[in-house]
Length: 176
Image (cartoon, rainbow, N blue to C red):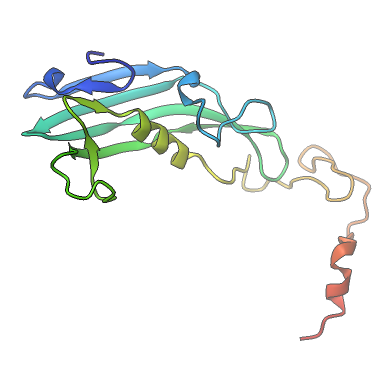
């Protein structure tokens, strides 16, 4: 990758035909994303992040198109078994010079300053919003027995089938 470093691209490196950027970022590059933790009970990055971008410019406007490819491991929301997912968020970004945008807080514009386009924060944010909120290992996952905790995908438990959480017993008396 040519450029300044990390995911910083110098405008002078973008030719009339554009700049093709292919690189691989290590998991440590995402240390500041709260959705990714270390340990088995959390979602964790299970691969490097492959970055494939085409950066073009027209006058001082910069367009970035491409995709990220990475894998995560996360517990199933029902049975807690580890699930590996491949995630491929698409990148479609337009940037304007900061001095050209009147309202810097305008959410319709991403900006850059000087002769360098810094994509680090944008790409980290894209990864953060592409992480799934709820993951199941299979649509027919039976989950855990609420009484004894047995993984019902692997074995049946001897718990009473009609078991109900006693905290909700008072709701049975409710008449609508």
